[in-house]
Image 1 (cartoon, rainbow, N blue to C red):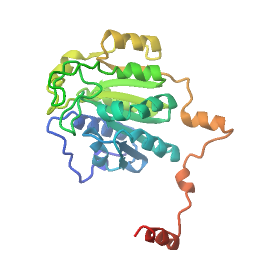
Image 2 (image 1 turned 180 degrees about the vertical axis):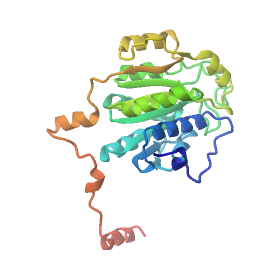
Image 3 (image 1 turned 180 degrees about the horizontal axis):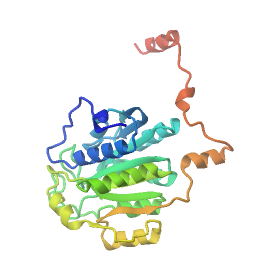
Length: 290
């Protein structure tokens, strides 16, 4: 059996004390340990931003990619080795601003992987600017009179774009978040979780007290297979609701749809079919760039 220690490396996280991202990392660890996934069977792919440092804090496969480009990289990893468990991680700036084009297409493409977005309503790594999720009136260095743009309703957007698994959680609710990540990993398709993760340094407006008072759980007996019900509850709560909002188990994953379109199963591990150059060719190629 794997333990949390199996996923620890020698790199100490340098998030600010009190940052919500610590809780997200702990929840991911708990979820993969509960499923007894070995470090060599997991890849954590991230983009750029405070949240995207997370990949370097796991003892597992990973890549710290470019701003907004975690999903193209992660989908490529998954399609090249379908037996690998792939979790992509981003922040709301990374995912919903420069990376939004990739996010929308990932929703509808439905590659069998998990996408966790740490939503703190601010750009933290660049020292506090508005993100697509910032509230109207949010004051920052670049919006001294307050943001006047309407924040993006991301869960409604995901459902409208064709996402087959849409959930939302709060990083302090460890039990719920671990359970949702586990369900996401079991889902045959693209599983999206938006996680409220407060920034204690650059967003005093949406801190722990704010989310504690504002968030509410889905009503008892909620049918997460009902698309209209999911959109209705999101509208009624202004998106400040947690739980599994929507799941469509009828649509084929991208991998299965591609196999059907090509008349046969897609190779599960293209990585094993890569022809590696011999030493002579490798050295020749390297010498060309000296």
